[in-house]
Image 1 (spheres, rainbow, N blue to C red):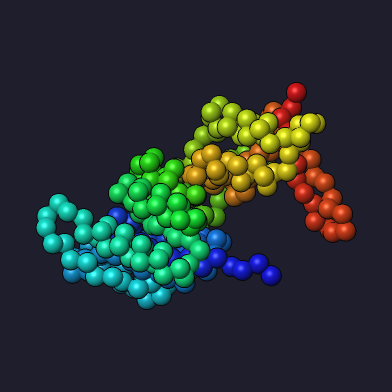
Image 2 (cartoon, rainbow, N blue to C red; image 1 turned 135 degrees about the vertical axis):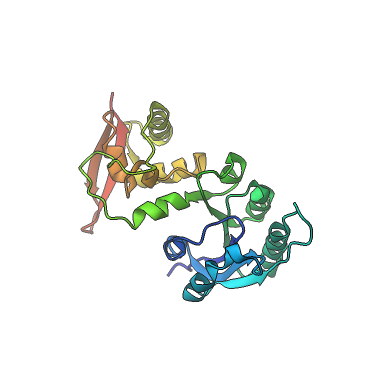
Length: 245
């Protein structure tokens, strides 16, 4: 049995809203077991009061960090120091950095240099350097939409607030990735496509475009062909895709 990854979840309380924390923790659980859960901030400030109930409900440990001087973010420094301490302790396989602050770009890069998996979670305002420094970056706005029931139609991304359009640039990214990985007949396993898209763009997520999974997103693109293949000795089917000639 494959060992589950142990994750350290470090949250920038000064930079992340307290909404949808439960959904955020459920998302993180897809990638491993969050054995360390800490949130950093100056808990003497009234604006952080909304976090208190949320922390108890999700077993997240608050770390007090006073603001020593105006204009300096002591919370960032405390979070970075803790991350390095956790790294050297060797008790985790990866980190989840929850912030929309580009100040954590170097930290994410350093953790990946140490062969750590790094997942970023933040708002859509997050600067690009921090996004690309992570193995995967998930927008909080996606998690907000996920909890709202929405009617969907086949092969169409439902019009929801904040959903991005499938532009020619997105289509080109997907089709070029398929062609990069395809065999001599043009076919490639969809799972490999998804993995490569993540490497090319850590913030690539089918939910950004209103689809819960990659398969319906791919199905909505006219010039991509999909084929289901039965897995020998199993009832499961594998999905292969190719760019139409």
